Length: 195
Image (cartoon, rainbow, N blue to C red; front, side, top):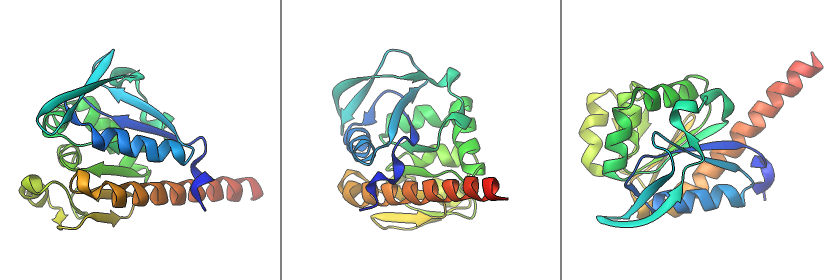
């Protein structure tokens, strides 16, 4: 199994209040099982609240305020869905800048459900192929993205999925992508050392 390849990899999970809880807890569990170090980053301090569809669910501690988060400190970012969470993050300039920097450097991004809204607002989706919750497909197309209806889409450094029912495929593809990214980063470092 290649699941030890992301030992110590620092993954930012970027959320505001009212995210879809399963799309937060399940990917975090998969990342931690694969050895990643997960940091919950949020525009608000203290705690964030999950949702089970339209019902308020559990509260989770925030590890790092978005204002204090430096994208250069992270190897990857995971974006849970939930319409309210995604809608609030997409208009946040700091959140846009965070994902833009991660994307420009080629580091991996995993986004599910409504989360690609942030990638739209950050100006990242032009020319990219991705999926999302079906209600935001027009936003993605209008921003120049190629929206497809599949349980999981991998496009270069991105993995995207549509909804909580796609979580098994999403989590597996996310861990694979993060592993590959880690291997490439390690090879680059080794090439530099051996030069």
